[in-house]
Length: 556
Image 1: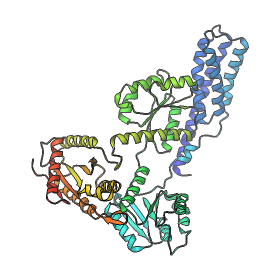
Image 2 (image 1 turned 180 degrees about the vertical axis):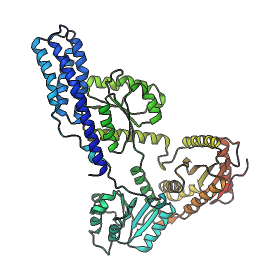
Image 3 (image 1 turned 90 degrees about the vertical axis):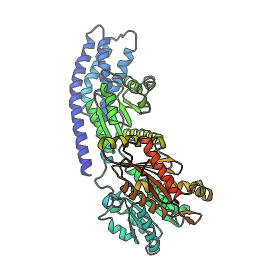
Image 4 (image 1 turned 45 degrees about the horizontal axis):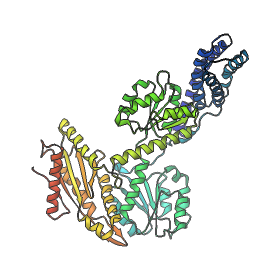
């Protein structure tokens, strides 16, 4: 067990003890309250006070390992609710005594703690994870016994900004992973010099398993046995030789993007602080970013500052119900798509459906295991992120769409004017792209577009904005960057792009790009539209001058 897992287990145990201590006092109060059922003429007020507290214990007990307590409280809650649903509550003395006795017996159930939740501990990330190469570059190791081919692939991967390294034997990789860890491993599993079990031995070794490193197989054979072998070994990708480098880069980019995606942001709204903290720990152990809100009246402010990708809320809180809070959230147009999931002990299906009509998306019933909770939350948050990306990002390249890159220019121009730092905007266009589509088909044309998109993402800074402006046109926003630096960066990208080989039916071809740049230093009074027009005019000048070049705009 790692230190992270040990600390998490200790924290969960501490919260469980706090919960038990608090519930012990609450059960003493419930026992006194239930005892009055025997002497009071009108028992409805007492049942109305008992019911919600039994409901809460029924929902929370299981989360802390008190499943027997949770079930017993559930039975009593259901019974009380049945009585309260009648117009007149008429209980004989035997019923009152039996109910009071069973409420008093709940305290005994508190000592019957079943196995504490362990899924969260097992899911906690290990300390050893993949590490990028020197200088923040992505380290890609290639295992290829044909040295000229391996050196060629390494050179091309370097053009995309990766830090590639070539190995010609699996045993050399096995030795290297003792001390280092690539971000991605690309290898041909069919070597001639080493036995066929070398790949299996490498990938089954404890050192390699500890890396948690994605693996892409490249092979000259795409038959079913080869693909099945890769699947059984847990490969993340399978590509055929001759290797299409832009496709390989696209696959590496997608795998790493998924692995290193920002944590899902989850907002937990619950007045039960022990349970809320338990939820926070369980979800955090799975890599999610979780905030807890115990004051529901601040939910809009919390959403505005935290930007959650899912709200997980209790349905029954002292002053507000979950459906009421969901309605308040849905009154805000920009929050209409935010997933809201109830986590409640409510088991009445009619009430669940009624609650969902208020604008929530789903209903999770307490008690719920840690594994079920994590899976349910992760799936829904992932779906929300996918939908959000579809709205803002181009599906082919993953870059910002036309409208959103223009919004980025407005935002960065305002920042540049506020900070008095230079801003450069560039427009790029793939030369003679129509000929690519006409000659090789749109599928190949898409790969050319994707290759340029990956090149831009790899060569530009995280702070730069990149968007697909339309077709084969791209817009790049370079904050805090003067014209000379921007020209140097775009020239480097142009030079790298023109040497990339693309394949179609074993035919290799290359493409070029043209770019135009405008800067706020040359256009201090330009607005976002004028800056973009200046960059477009510079692009036109580059095209007119013969293409495959970068031009800068010097005046309006």
